[in-house]
Length: 344
Image (cartoon, rainbow, N blue to C red):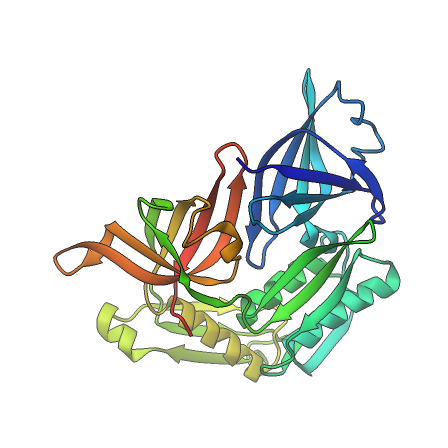
């Protein structure tokens, strides 16, 4: 069973010492905030107001190949007769307590530039605890405006609308904990030699066909009147021939440029024009898919013999992308959420 070391830091990232306790599940999520819990005995001499202070930082280091996990102590903090349970959200939560300026407009800017500037402007007001690292500056120019928007929400929505990815990773150097923020055209790598095999290093707890299929999208942007609002429609005839015509519309607040709107609707269509199998898998730290061999965002291979259709029987051998994983120290297993994909 894996052993995890938990280091605690104040809100400036200065080390306070190690903390022992019962570590709950620890999660990593693509373009979303992960979570961990830690229960500490009241009899522990380190269970002090200083060590367990709200908004302290925590670094969890594993010896089984999982990457370091860093987060912020938030509410709820649960007290029982014998122990105190901390709720810790990963470094993305540092942005949740900050907001954009009002009347902040971007005109024809790359999504990566918007990501970078929003964080830099927040740091100029007061340090967030994270700094911008690598940023992909490609893609179509975007027209966005912000008015006291929650900074984390703004970045998550930007990733969702554009189809690009971001990551916020902990950095432990010279006794200090901080985070680096990166923006990607796509996070992760193709790892075809990493294979999750049913009955060997994984078991499936769920395989679900994600839907509904939508193959005709109408998108509407923002404007003071219906005439001024940008509007577009996109459809996929191949999908319509297979499933029939399935229509839906979506409003995109803050989108005032037609080109940006078209890119957003195109991303929606690409995601919804076909059924997307999504699996939940219990994985163990065994080759050819040891924990250290892959990360969130990577594409790996899944081989199953009792799930999916293959000819007249069952079988599944497909590339999938890892969308989330959650480690349980008690079982030593990772729960993976993966979605069918293709190696590039």
